[in-house]
Amino acid sequence: MSKVKYYYDSETLSYRKIERKKRRTFKFAAMFILAAALFGFLFVFIASQYVESPKERALKRELANMQLQYQLLNKKMDEAQTVLSSIEDRDNNIYRLYFEANPIPEEQRKAGFGGVNRYKNLEGFDNSKLIIESNKRIDILQKQIVVQSKSLDEIAELAKEKEKLLAAIPAIQPVRNEDLTRMASGYGTRIDPFTKARKMHWGMDFTAPRGTPIYATGDGVVTRADNRSTGYGNHIRIDHGYGYVSLYAHLYKYNVRKNQKVKRGDLIGFVGSTGRSEAPHLHYEVFKDEQRINPINFYYGSLTAEEFNELLEHASMENQSLD
Ligand SMILES: [Zn+2]
Image (cartoon, rainbow, N blue to C red):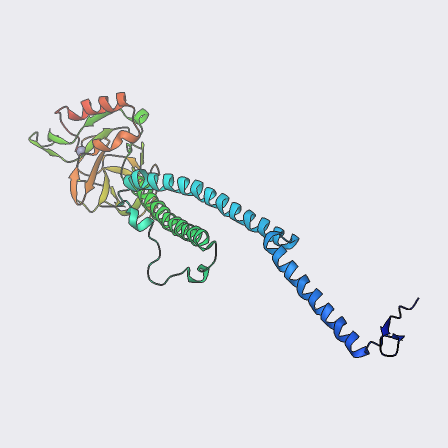
């Protein structure tokens, strides 16, 4: 049904059709659409201030999750820091102390990074502080781990050195206890078996039958195995490094040659009575920095307390040496 509208024309006294201009109709329509669109936009804009879109909600959730994850990471960093601090503590107070290395000062271990601001690109966000703080912590933690790792490398090196030193020091008895006839004479003033005069005896005499095995008392290098030294007869010198030299005299036979490397406990020769000697025995001396010292102080590694006391008693008796 077409909606044709009429109006009453008082001049002509008749109803006349209302003629609407097409252009006007179009103008009305355009205005209506514009107004509707404007209203719509306004509505959505205002609504969006109070109502979240699904996308916004998802982003917010993600942000909250990220913050939570950062907090959890910080907690894990706390734990790692605690463990590392305990390692550093032991490093400074036990390992480094034991190996006579200076402790690493706290400032050096926990030094941050000076100069340029490494975190500039992280600035200017809502969560900048959290992210920068976390980054700083992990950077310091990383540096601490590097310092600690280097310290342990150093300790390992020192331990190896100490092990070498311990292996080098002449620390066992050169003749087995069960092979000994007796401990004839110790270090100190003794009666010379030939002149019967009191004089300094610079080593220890171990009486044992001819051919009894003699062992190197520490790791080292044989520097001499000959009889070209007055009085000692066939004798061996071992240079142990660190200023230690051991000497084995009056040998019957050698089991090593000059420049040979030996380990503690290696068979180096056999007991005899060559040189200025009264009866088969081993005359044993220890040098530290070219000074002869009492070898008895070095047997702690191989003897029980009882055996050591017995040895000490025998060695300290002022008797006649065998030279
Ligand atoms: Zn002697």
